[in-house]
Length: 158
Image (cartoon, rainbow, N blue to C red; front, side):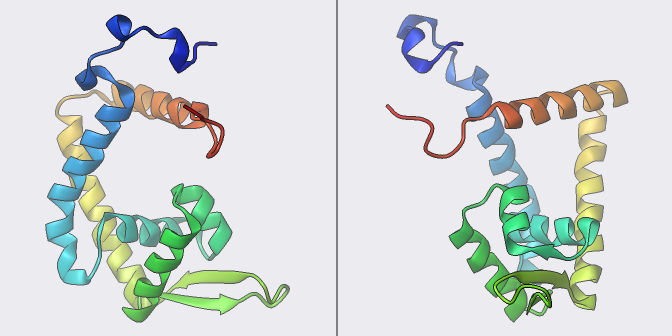
């Protein structure tokens, strides 16, 4: 397996061809496109994704959301406090384990999830102008493999 120390600077891929930089650019561009549209709802791209995740998967434990969204616990806590303040989610203690907090959507949260799903559909329609359904399926599979191949937090040292 290659690690960073086996790549010489002259063999390093140009910035524009690095997976990490490309995914950054995609996410940054999505924020520029989407945030102005969802800002009137007091949402940003992270919070809108959290709402859609809960809408799709149903009530979730905070830990499940942290894992699904790949966000730090502190970021998730901040996002959930805002979403609760804005009446998109409810945080309740589990009936079976008082230490566990379960997140559910309010009706307002369900309504805004549909708005965010429509925005996602619009983005996909733009991508579909450039990629065939087969290419989108392949891209999705490849991105899932990239994500699963990433090191765990703390496993990388310089």
